Amino acid sequence: MKRWIGGIIPLLLPLSFALAEGTQPKLDTGDTAWMLMSTALVMLMTLPGLAIFYGGLSKNKDTLNTIGMSFLAYCVVSFLWVVYGYSLAFGEDIGGIIGSASKVFLNGVTVNSLQGTIPEMLFVAFQLTFAAITVALISGSYIERMKFSAWLVFSILWMSLVYVPVAHWVWGGGFLAKLGALDFAGGTVVHINAGIAGLIGALLLGKRKDTSLIPSNLPLVVIGAGLLWFGWFGFNAGSAVGANGLAAAAFLNTNTATAVAALAWMFTEWLHAKKPTVLGLASGAVAGLVAITPAAGFVNIYGAIVIGALAGILPYFAVAMLKPKLGYDDALDVFGIHGVAGILGAILTGVFADPTINQAGKGLLYGNPSQLTVQLISVGVVIVYDAVMTAIILFITKALVGLRVLPEEEITGLDRSQHGESAYNIT
Image 1: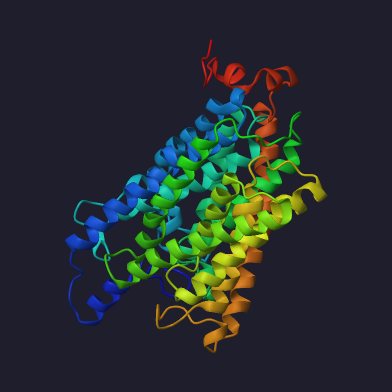
Image 2: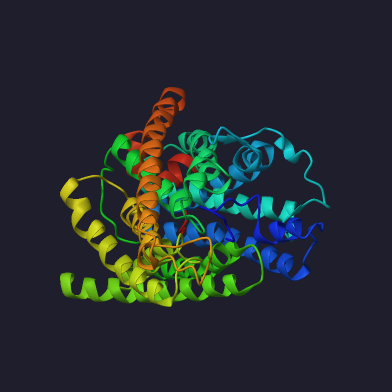
């Protein structure tokens, strides 16, 4: 996004120019059209993209439950975001920690109010889709053993107590934004946030009885990955909040890094495991999408290539070697892919941020080593806060409704035990 220091969204560049010239900001129909499309693209990432990506990865007997967790997350966040989420994330800053409650139930957000050159209502919707997919991403660590009721309670609490504050810190004018943290489209706010929450939940939930990852429907996984890639153009290029050159740079960087990461994962797996799997290609693409997200509107094409290459290698080893060695059951590798690639991308943004692409970012290679320090601090703050709060939320959820299904329900499958349905009614 056109985010000044670390993404202070409420004061967009077009608005600052307008104020400097003593004129009122004006609606730009081109920007508005692009942002309407971008919002729809990001919605597509959750439903159906992530839902069927995760659903295809899960066991036959748990497919519907897995899809349902993404569906529920989108619905919960869609409601809570307009009630209080938007106000607390993007309202007037209070002490660098949280936004004010002045826009609860979208109070004062009218059809005529603007956020830069687009309607504020559209900006609300765009940010809603980011919050929704962040919550949905976490479910990949918890599938095949978490109660659906527990997921409902967790989604409400986590969105309210973790996502909203972190979004304010980085994008809403909070203390990390003031520190100078750079996050173009969600490296810290979305992916590190989701990855750490996934890891903590996997540790506290404990292992499934069957920890194998044998996708029930690999073609569905590939379709889901393709939809994620497609929707990610709205995620990253839409974060320019306008139809402009910065959006084009983010679009091209996103595609390049993703393709390079998919190839890097494939070749790494080929050398390490002796076969290049289609699942590996899809996993590498997602890792590339994650890693380029914080950097998409800050780096040039060389930076995008390096970030993509590393995103295809480091997350592979996190999934193939680190997870087995440490023994945690992150079912769909949310930490290994989103957490590791998100951390990688956030840090490398501090190295490769090129001021000729975006004046708001200047990294180590362009004479500003302090930016790398700022990125490391922001990553560390989000990891610690997220880990502590996620653990607290899970303990609260356990006290309220319990966390895990009964052993016999897990064996039967969560589709039947939680919903009384089956994804594949084959006779």
